[in-house]
Image (cartoon, rainbow, N blue to C red; front, side, top):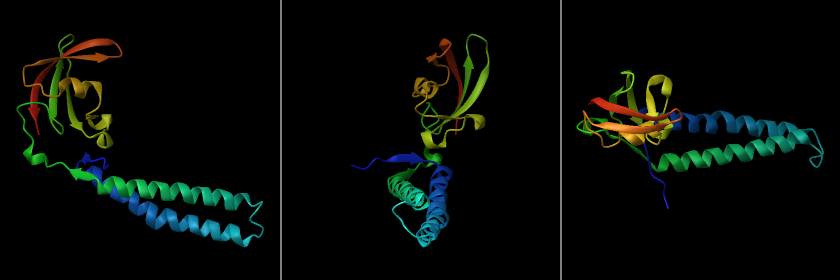
Length: 157
């Protein structure tokens, strides 16, 4: 069963760059380490050889995982996002009804989340509470400090 995940163009490019690095830089480097360790003689008690083989196994596992992830990736067409309600890839301006603090977040796939850039994961409590809401609607969100009531001020793309 395939596990389809949605990405922005930048998020998918990040995966491709990582795969390229592992395939063209990391893999050859590990192969070189294995060859050097093999040249040192007896492999039965060669810790360098064992470590390099372990690193090779981990690298190949990461490569296989990334290839699978890329094969099942779908890019979101941000131009077709409905701005009448909060959805994935929506830019949402919300207001805390208690202290009137206004925040703006972009709801993104989990791999693209970066709080410093205002991008929150679609799986986060705030995003889950906001999904499907329209401008003017309120969302009660469970936070570590307790329940917080937010009002959706603006939705854009």
